[in-house]
Length: 284
Image (cartoon, rainbow, N blue to C red; front, top):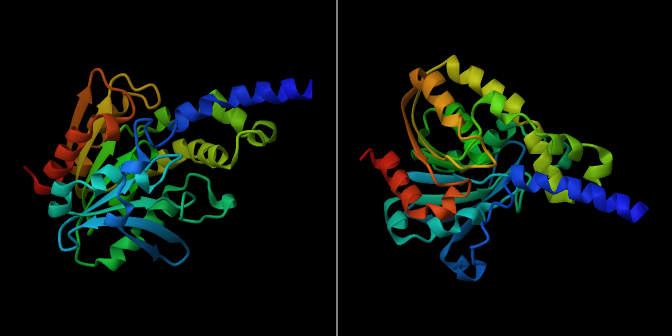
C-alpha cells in the first residue's frame, strides 16, 4: 500500500514538469555538439550572490544576455553563443540563474523573487560599465526580463520576451503546483522540481509587483514579444495584456504571434529569434 501511495503522488506531481518548463533544454538538443572550449566562463558577484556566466563574441559590442526559465541553465542558449554572425555583432552571455547550475542559492531563498534574481544577474553589468544590453528571456526568464530592464534603465536598451507569463492573473499557480507544495509530494519530486515549483508558486505576486512598477514609470527600453498561439504552458493571452497596459511605459512594444507554435521557441524558431535579437539591438 505504501508503494502504491508513493506512486500515486509521484504521478500527481508529473504535470509540474509541464508548467514549470518541462526542461529548459528541448529534446532535440545535442550536448555533444556544444563546443565548450569555444566559450569563456566567469563568476560575477554582487553583495550577496555569485552568478555563473558562459560568454562568447566581441566584448566591445552591445551585450546580449540570455535568461533561462525554470528549471534550466545557461546551456539552453548554447547554440546562440556559438553562432558566428551573432559573435561578430555582439558580446553574448548566458547565465545559470541563482539557484540553478553553478549559481548557488540557499534553498530557503528560492521563492521566485524577481528582485533577488535581477540584483544577482545585474552583477555582470558592473563588469562592463559602458556596455548597453539586450535581455533575451524564455518562459520564466521572459517574466523576469522586464524587471531587469526596470532595475537597470541606464544599461538595458531592449528585451526580447519568448513565451513569458506577464499578466499577473495568468501567472497563478495551478492545482498541481499547490499539490507539490505539500510536504508529501515535495518529498517525492526531487530537488530540481521542488525548486522550480517554488519559483512558480511566487510568480503571480512577483508579476503583480512588477506590473505596478511598470505602470508608475517610463522606460527607454524597447520590448519585443514572441508568443506561440498553441502554447500549452504559458497563456497566449499575455501579449494582448502587455499591448493594452504597458504601451505608454516603454519606448516601443512589438508583438509577433505564431499561430502554429508552442512553448519551445528558442529552439524551434532559432532563425526568427536570432533575427529579432539583431532587429532589437540595431533598430533595423
